[in-house]
Amino acid sequence: MPECTALFFCRLCKMHLLAEIRADSA
Figure 1 (cartoon, rainbow, N blue to C red):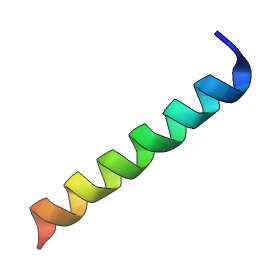
Figure 2 (cartoon, rainbow, N blue to C red; figure 1 turned 180 degrees about the vertical axis):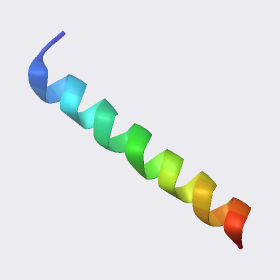
Figure 3 (cartoon, rainbow, N blue to C red; figure 1 turned 90 degrees about the vertical axis):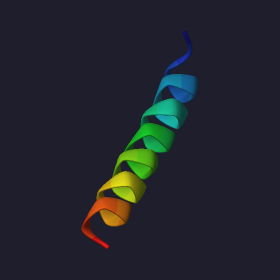
């Protein structure tokens, strides 16, 4: 897997996790 793709998915995962944390705390 290309590094750029891995970093892209890593970024998406982090955004998703942050969104879930915000939803839980809200």
